[in-house]
Image (cartoon, rainbow, N blue to C red; front, side, top):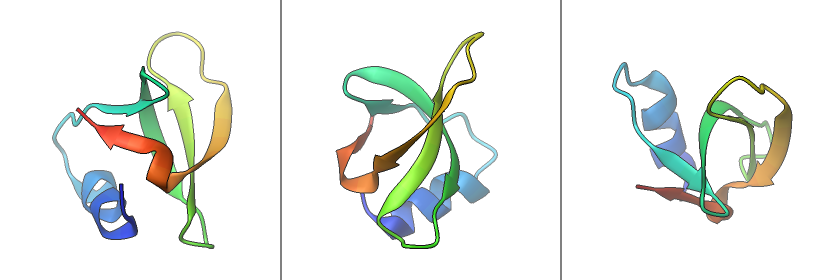
Length: 59
């Protein structure tokens, strides 16, 4: 995924499914470097992880 698409998803009110390593995640923010994003798993656990944006896949 690219930086522009992540910005679109973050500003959208729609529920857009994004996966990281085959697992559904919420994107919390695009980090300042423009190459990583902070995400957390969908569901009760809200552990946040920083991932490379090119590893995120829109479903």
